[in-house]
Length: 493
Image (cartoon, rainbow, N blue to C red; front, side):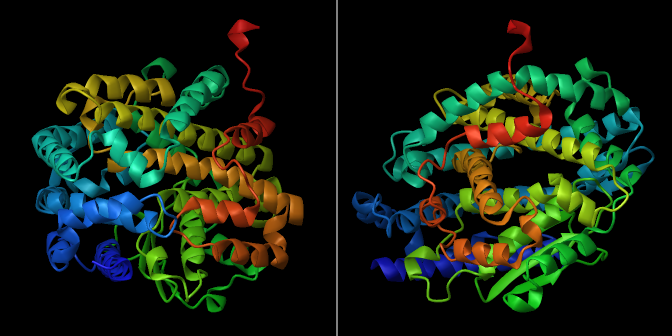
């Protein structure tokens, strides 16, 4: 198939999937059936298309098409298994605490539950469900590996290098170094927060972290509405919704809406959908800011963008804009302007501790994903998940989560890249517009220039920003240290 024709087919598929997921997030449908959407593009599913494109896969115009094609063929081949499993979760009612609730509402309940015993019961009900579905997860994973080999890839790592580039080994090494360098300081900062939340630090669990960042830090902080905060922030940057008419926002509370934030790239820049289910969790504001950052970036992309650059959203680019906008939640001048009455110093430190936690968790998750898809039987690797995530987060992530929490295609490595590059863009914004860049219309203009670089690869964005080493971990390390203190290993001093 000719390259532009292939790109247009992939773009149509991406839009159909995005629209389906947007409908689910808005509560318009209970589940998403992706298999018929893939089946509507039979030419995309031919393995010959991968073979024909592979010799040119490293070319800048071909790489995003090739990556989107490989992912579409593997996900399309697994779609019946994945759809059935997701539908089961979407309809499953869990029991406990003398009540019933939907599986998908468990995390929200955990965030709001101050009683640790009750939180544990909520988490146990969810873990029992995940354990029941472990054979389904493994069947889909084995199917994906079969499709990978059938497409001519000798290993999962080789496939992911073809998808993302040859930086994966260096990035995983940097992740290990970051975990080692930040371990002592992270633990020193996390322990008092856990104790304040009523958690014995040495017994901290995954559900305790959900409560810490959610309910414990949320309602008690006296935070304003996330929606009001978003509107006032965008007004300062001269980025009102009217200036980017391609974004459709669904931000109000409504029965049936899914928790959290979803950005759906249906047909950017003309059709980008931002769906948010309001919450009083401490993380609601940064999550909405993050989602808005991605939606704005998509809506500001050039209309005339080449077909080969519209096939898929690169996870490193979306993670970059998520982190840039979420970081406002830890900017002292932004806090003073948009969170009146909140202890600015405490809020700044809490945000940067949360950011450090997120980056460390991604480092641990990326290490485990690389191990999971390496030699050996995936079903025998759950204990390693517990070890890596406990080491990274300071809390026990029970083995039942090991498949549900591990994205395919080593995507956590790209999300980590986004956090690293976001620190570079924040340096750029602050150098040009000052630490209160979010109040400057010229910062909004700079953001528009950056958004025009597109969203299919990180490299064009790095070029526009004048950044030569996008994966350098030190700018992020220095940004975190400036608030949290130096990450020297105090045990070695």
